[in-house]
Image 1 (cartoon, one colour):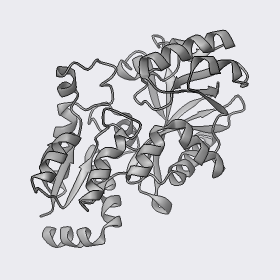
Image 2 (tube, helix red, strand yellow; image 1 turned 180 degrees about the vertical axis):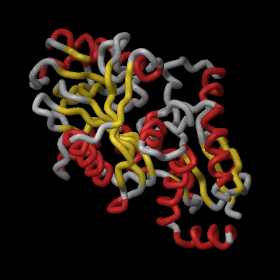
Image 3 (cartoon, one colour; image 1 turned 45 degrees about the vertical axis):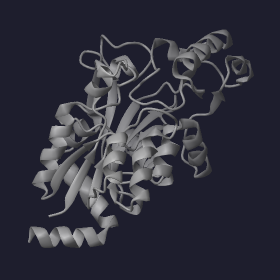
Image 4 (cartoon, one colour; image 1 turned 90 degrees about the horizontal axis):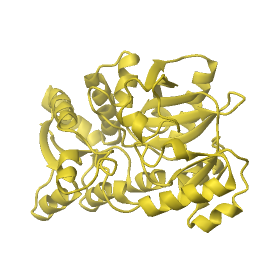
Length: 336
């Protein structure tokens, strides 16, 4: 039986350390860890909980090893925080589920990711980057624009002020975001069309869209798009609907093109938004998508598409094992 290590950031641990609610928005609940442990055990693996990157480092130094690691660590500090666990595992030659250090670092920095996408012809909104508030005056994009931290997830830094309608307001919003998040601000041409999130499993040519979900604003929605408050407190604010019309299929094609261009692996989620003409554009990718069994977007998508939580984890692991035929053979022999 293959030994599977499980790396994760538990939100309650960081709250106890004094981190705030928004700072820990990407971290996991005990329910997620329990769900993953149950699903991986059902697939025939001996699961061992490891925890965050420092716990992993200590155990590696102490000589512990696993056949592979199922990694959902988001990390805490720096633009390379999502790459920290994959880097450690690469150093110790331990295979792991999900994307490698390059992809995790690249996709966290949305501006750098957009440059790769533009090179590969994947449609994405025109953008500018503001490292200092004074640079707002040099932004030539037509207003309104949308402003957010360049390297955050779970809607952090996105709210009513994100939709900016004038150069003067842009400088104020940029100053506030830079002060709070200590990183540049991504400014994009505002796309007023439909908003989708696309669930993807696999990698490269084998990657597939498991479904397209439209994000629909309800009566109590917080202005400013699919941001922190709407993500965290979505009931009554945001509705989700599985869609399969022509525009949704175009959104899936854009998502898959971006997924492949950024070399994402195994499973995740891509956000896509259409312009005024109904043409979908790549917004961002989450290569470490939430896997809470009850309310994560990727799990919603899988359920809407007829996949159980167990099915979703099995498909993610199958993609990983296809990359490691030696492990697949050992696992198959142990299950026989």
